[in-house]
Length: 525
Image 1 (tube, rainbow, N blue to C red):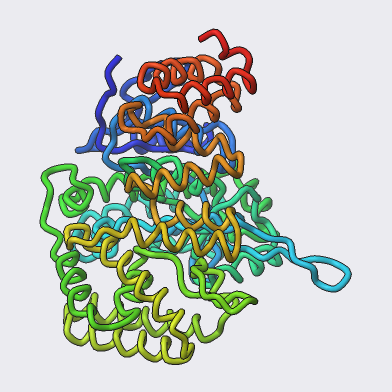
Image 2 (image 1 turned 180 degrees about the vertical axis):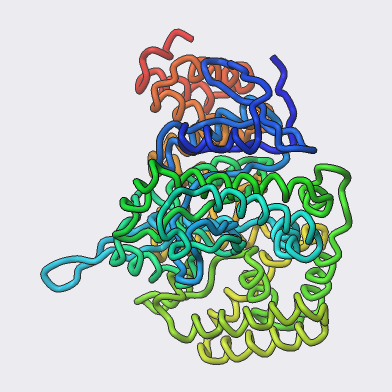
């Protein structure tokens, strides 16, 4: 069966949420494929296929997304359902769209704290594609009629809510919020826990349990799929969560899911959003051109292009001085927590970003980012910081303007070597995953790092979607070990046969012998 094509694929955490979504986007068809079930939904003028996780958490979401992407070719992945609000200005019933998903529990570290310990979070980020974020940010004004229709639908549902004093809990007209979403494997129902999570990023708007898994599966591919997280806020992730969930036989939950689904349906009806997602025809991204112009203008500024990329969420690392005095890349969320100065730098850069978005004045933006980067660089007074910022600049230029002629692979690999020497392999894996592994040499380095860490499952997820002929020799050999180590004997045998047919030198024969010793069931293949 050939892959079917749809505009959007929708990941829905629970059957309960799916039932409420069907009230907004009716089911057209149900398809069984290799033991999984997929549902074609009516979201209006776009084609949509959905899959249900059936349980909460990042792993079920990752597995469900992997099955969906194996079944269908899609242009946009949407994670749709309920979430908990982390911002006091966000009310129950409001809708939050994730401008970034942060798996806040990823790469956590338990550190000594007197006679006890404390958890230091680092996180792993996936930003919303800029053109999509830009369109959603203008939805209320550029498509005012559609936005008003969404609010009218919500108002009608609100009137039907048979819950006493409901006006004290939420507004009749919901609001749209665009902000970072924290995602992890913990049900948030504690004010103290929320405070701990917001140490990672005080700007978190909402929290959920599935987005990180789904976005990881869609992003960690040779051809990544853009992702959009749409969550209806059913609680404030605090001690009142259980009470709200139970009111009116889960009436709040139904209301909030319908708000999120209705928002998505009206958004999908707008040509501006469809163009941003390339559902219709590819459109020229004017703002993208402005960013490339800014990149060009910052060529003479050490760290300027890096700061621009961090601010517009194309890059997620900054310079960190180790105990030994070396300068290595570190995740910006961790740096923000550890360094007040770095946090202030990001706040100032964010103000410069907002000014550029409002005025489109590239010349002023270049001047401002160059000044901020120069002041930051000058505080270190180190040749090492200059070298690392120059490396960051190259990666930033390649990330934001791929046609600019910059090949960042060599720079990324050099930074990976520095990290391995100063911090270790885990830091290398984290870094290469976050900067993206699509360039062949970078992907190969990431796979080799995972192999040394014996993280076989991640190798399988990353490489099983790549045609065998596109794999390097090292990747193919690591994939064979990964299939065998994870118990997939059929695929281990298939890839082993491919290796035998493709490579016949002495080294290949030694590899096959080593494989047969470690996994005897492959010996006769």
